[in-house]
Length: 542
Image 1: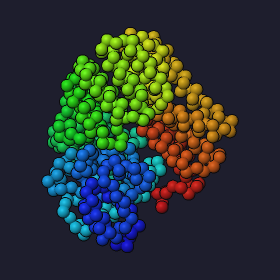
Image 2: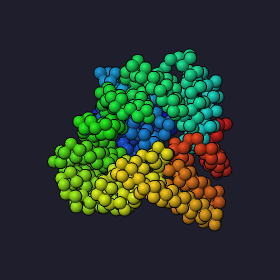
Image 3: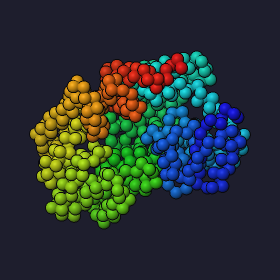
Image 4: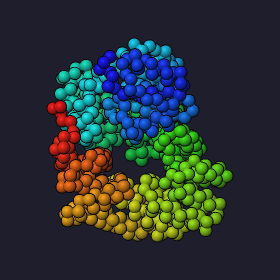
């Protein structure tokens, strides 16, 4: 019991009586540093400022998000570290529903009613496993992924009980690093001994990464047929169909997944997007309406969802409902940075459908100006804005918006998609002009940062490249050089923990965007060396 006294816990439970009961049970387990939250929304605020060892969360949180959806938001937005123990409390009648459709599994489930002894047993079990994996988690948190892989190898022998878990994590780390061949080998070895669903899914991911889409599709289709509630397999099967230019098949797979697990906002949004692409307006409208309704209770809701719904309603010529959605957008997202741009584009779509071309052009000009002043607007929305600008002969506005889209393209496929916006409008020559301008913009930003560093203005280099990465977060070249600028500052000016964390984030983003970039290894080595120099990072030996 004494060993638990240093642990911190957060209870998320809407009913005061149950919160008090959970609190008393944790006290009996020896845990006294406990905070409370009554909903997913009130839980986000403390989690943004504090890391907890244990989160005890009721599944049924009342109106809005349930505990599983909250966990997905927390993991997706990286608000809880890898080592946080997340336990969902649920009634037995809901257990099958909760477990079978889980996207991201919590550490454990506890069925009500339960005793303090039961809770202590589950916490002790989770802590035992966490202790085994904690050194690996620390290395991962600091971007030391190759060292983490080696420590997983050691863990397989040191902790036979968790050998398969260590191998699974090792394979996932290879996937993160873009080392699909290495991951493929591990998954095949696992499948030779035990045909577990997650290993088959992992193997399919490695095939997808190698663009072996036909093989991936066969594996995923079989997995969905045999494990009808393994939701990640549906997502990857849909993604594979899209890669094979089969949008109708992707839509059918997503529709099946939504029927089984109807609360995942990201999947609902994706279904709506694919349905819109294939001209299935009924499915698109229904999906986006559900996204808007469900996201209302999330701290991470996005006004762009309203734009997607307006776009669908306008295509259906339902202008009255579109106007209602725009009013809700203005009311629900008042004060949010992206709202002016989203409102102006939505209004432009509506006015164009109503035949008010002059008013539509005015709103499009307003939207372009709003995009200029803020960051965070998706490339998808900017391309929709540019397309409408071209339709209204606002070439300057379209060029301005698409210059940023092209500068922010993560790869050639994203750039090609952007070029098609101009080509479909019969403006291929303008596309080539904007491509050249976009490339020049990136070159000027990167060379400007490098020149400042060469002149010894390391602070200026960080300021310039941080702004560039904020504006173009999907451009691997920009993000990579932002990380390099920060590391050069730390190397030449002095230690700054906040900047070191910023560098880690840039390296992680660069690895996600371009995992095969050979310069990532020396960049990560420089980062680790900096951390060791200042005693700020664990090593495999520790």
